[in-house]
Length: 350
Image 1 (tube, rainbow, N blue to C red):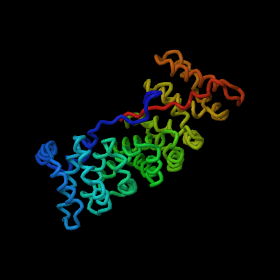
Image 2: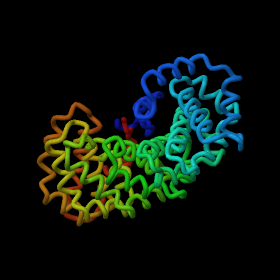
Image 3: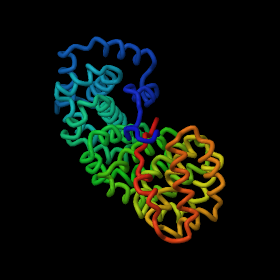
Image 4: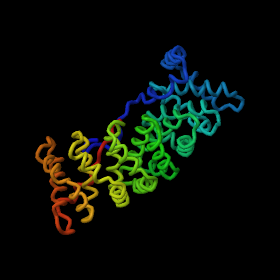
């Protein structure tokens, strides 16, 4: 995340390349289908969509058609557009409710791959995919389907604030927090990125409250305190989004976040020092004298002074100086220099 940058997570358009294809397909079949996908005709795509939509299609036929749609959309932007234009979205969304784990995984991942194309995202939402994707995120039998549902919801949340709000209302936030707590390494990263997309921005207040209520702050702090998991930067970025609200600040303090953040300012990477400083600015804002006293007593001033003198980034040095001034105050008066310094948009990288 860089200050004053876009809040959109940086991801490649070949997102499914790290998904479960190799666990499902032999290398030979995978190679043949990718070769076929490169030269797929409109007629071939239409036939696959017809297979998906036909009540007469067998389970094997549905699996095969969904798998091919998934792979057709895997790497080709042109295919993604043509598949949606051919009417694939309604039958793919319907497949999310099927009990067969493999069929559900193919459908989820096909929708993920189609949503990699920005111009498809509104159509995916309009096709009613949000609710079924949230249900797949919560209860799909395949771990890959759950993780890919999180990725698909992330892409849809990037559409606009109303899409992020709809995803939150559909119940995605507590499920993502659960994935953040107990998912595998990839699942935790996907959950953190999706939570950031849902909880950042001016229109995300309800999602931030949902995340805090679901225990996201505790889970994030645990990841930040354990560098070996490789999640410190991502978790700090999500925490920064949450502590922008009073409930997030209170949770961060109650869950022991102050020592974690002060330690990051003192010994973290340059990126981590920045994120910890921004989080502490939120915690110490709004005339929160009790929180300021807590942060100061934790020993934050010396590492902040060092940061203000050593950072190569003028804006970060300025933020450290603002925070030092807040901590040194003996009254509850808010310094004029704190206004406008804490609401810094940041970017979550994958």
